[in-house]
Length: 251
Image (tube, rainbow, N blue to C red; front, side):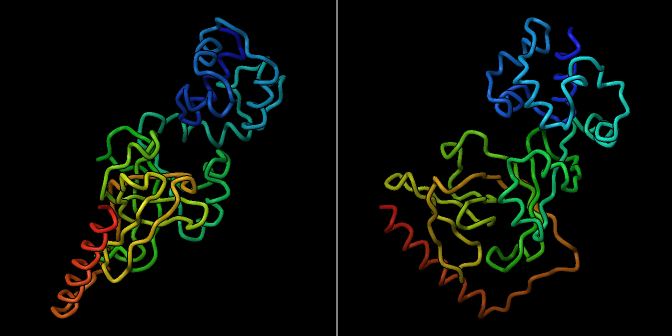
């Protein structure tokens, strides 16, 4: 295997990317990544320049050095964490204070790398991310909870109706809602709160940049939402009204 191909494979695994994910970032076909890593082809200079920009490496380092043995400042900080967690579910955490930055940097690998990470042993293999939510629109899930979501890779067709998602959109930012799809308005998604005091609303599917299906909720044990009987009765009535409204719209 050539040094360049070996380095590409090492760097890809360092970030925990599949060949398909790496190919998308480089703007080439997945088969080319395989060819480079298996020494069936030499990476083009323009491809290596993109890799160098991503990992802050020079062409000389990519072509002449075995990066898996180097102790450079960048790789030294990242190698142990990334390689040891490559086969586990490394979850990047997006706190509320980072939400605005996430909208601009969700596709920037360097921005994502700066987020804190953790793992959950009960999750199967997948691409997960955690988001802190604020507000009472999804009660009984309390404000301040952390929602761990698995990324929806296949687009809108893979959305499961009435399931809870972290929805990242250009106009609404990061919200935690249930999604209701309509066969009549396929370019629209209806977002519904678990707290029926909040009215459903629609977003354009084209404005959605990421979807993460909720898999786990993490909240403090000291946080408990209590309801009295009258409040529960009002919530049930509001929920029934919303269901009736949604049915009329969908029909």
